[in-house]
Length: 383
Image (cartoon, rainbow, N blue to C red; front, side, top):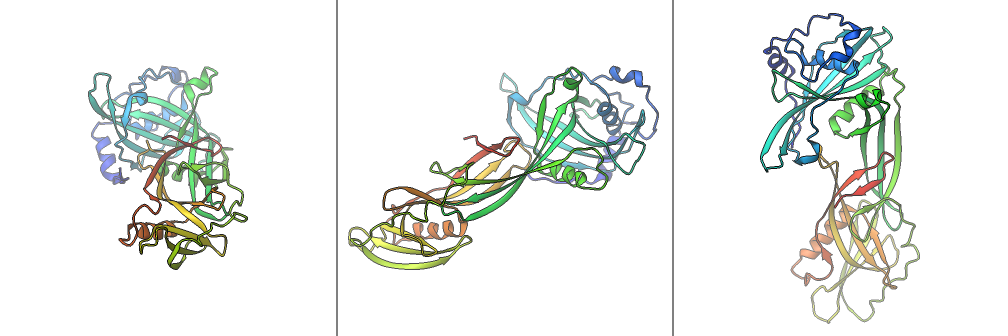
């Protein structure tokens, strides 16, 4: 689903229709912390309620529907201009909300939609409004705008940035991309001595929090940890975690002396210069074999050409999709090597579709894989 911002004025007006009284900065007694229920009073604005909940130990009885999710038709909204609120010497100095529309399925097959809002609160605890010491996240079910319900509250504990580079069998690098994740702890479980860690990978939320963590306002002690990882294309046409050795450097070339040479072309790709030569195995004037030499290296046979897509965080409102190419080569000893260069993949796709070829020169099919990411950045294929 596309991400579309909602004008803050119209959104605030919608909330104001509920006759909330969140503008009044009243001090709440500390001894009421444990008495806040999951159903928020109509007299509390959502930002105000989120502030109170983010400050307080909570026991959520709302059932968790994430396990019967069948799809995520999600639209992401930014809710701006939410009020600050003081509570027991703690003050939210910045708040941003994101609304999601989610589709679920009940056990009987009935499909229904819920609206959920995630509020990111930056909390000052030292009476200095120029800095924040904590970041809290509150999850609300606000399908019924007159009766928003708390689902969970969390504290942000860690923030990770992953920088990836796809490395080919000749050690050339391509397709650099980055992902981010926020690691949050369930505050209710923390109060019980259990530390339950969840993850937020929504791109827009992570981007916003990342910018705040890098700002001079960050006095929280929450650090951004960066992982630089090299990954490789593999025989299953997916991406794997360990970068390859330079196996192409000393690969034995293939012998094409017994085949009819039909011509050759030079291509300049993102990762190097390629010579592609066409052969006929039967002596006909049809392309039946294609060889490739990269930057003057050994001539290897093209066995497969995969225009690939890697989808990360598929359940997010905007899954992050990386397009890359995989070219599988075979050397004179029948060993396989892999090059990732989208320009080369595009050139080989044109060759594959050319009427002069007999279409079984090499495999050419799209490859779509979904991945998750571990806390330290290892990628995990899901299909």
